Amino acid sequence: MQSLGVLLVFLISACHGLYFHIGETQKKCFIEEIPDETMVVGRYKVEMFDRNTNSYVATYAYGLGMHVTVRDPDESVIMSRTYASEGRFTFTSHSAGEHVICLHSNSSAWFSSGQLRVHLDIQVGEHAVDYQQIQAKDKLSELQLRVRQLLDQVEQITKEQNYQRYREERFRQTSESTNQRVLWWSISQTVILLVTGFWQMKHLKSFFEAKKLV
Image (tube, rainbow, N blue to C red; front, side, top):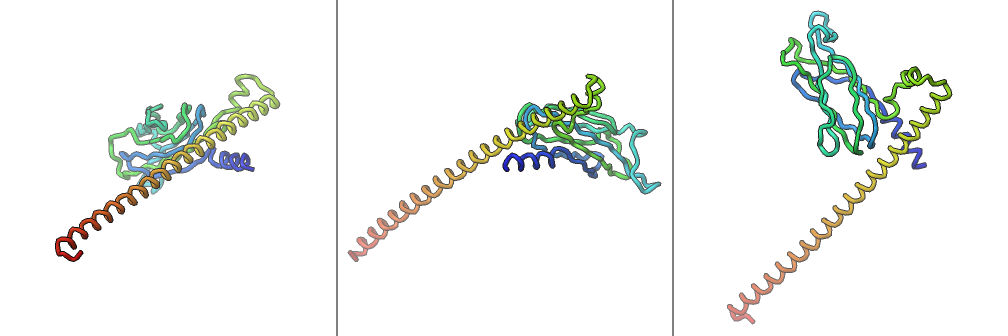
């Protein structure tokens, strides 16, 4: 049942498409949790708002492009490259964890609209593989191609399960560290209260002796 849940989560999060609006000099970043040794393909298209038609149009004629930067969980840059206004970028993760994908316009000119719309589709794992191209290149039959797809799916599910175990282990370590800090904080508070109470009792005793009340 747990493996089925992991599989469903993986299939839901394996790919997603969206669009967002940014200013021409604004940077937009996304966080993707990716297993290690996993290929990621991002497809994008940049559009500009045209006041004459009151709609978004392609930006080919303006020479507008997108700069894509990808950082791994260790904050190391694994990809930084400028692309055209429409296309795709590809990278392979070398460590499991949160990867930050940032996009921003490479243009310094300010258009009259001041706003761009970017369509973005990120595909992870075997969903990023073009099996039609592989079939044509390796001259595979339909059965051979299907077997190849199944093998890739099994491999990706294994990677995803390993990543989920890694996340559980990291969460457990964080929980244990937090509990230990809370324990030591409680002990410190208790010691401070005891020391304060002892000092107050000693001070009161000295006060009563000075007043000759005891």
